[in-house]
Length: 56
Ligand SMILES: [Zn+2]
Image 1 (cartoon, helix red, strand yellow):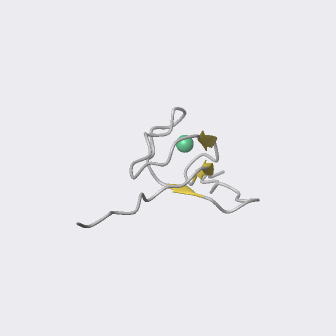
Image 2 (cartoon, rainbow, N blue to C red):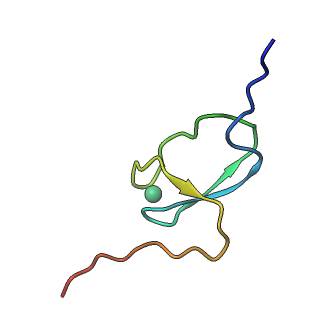
Image 3 (cartoon, rainbow, N blue to C red):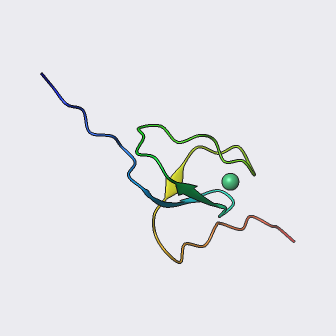
């Protein structure tokens, strides 16, 4: 019997695209898309600053 580890533990994840924070309250192996921008990649790094792609 193989027990597969869940990918995401309880933590606060930050959207790498817009920086929106999402609190994960249940261990899961799949995070839902960002409710703000729809991205599905997150970081747990505190103090993370989202990229700014504003061009003048
Ligand atoms: Zn986002």
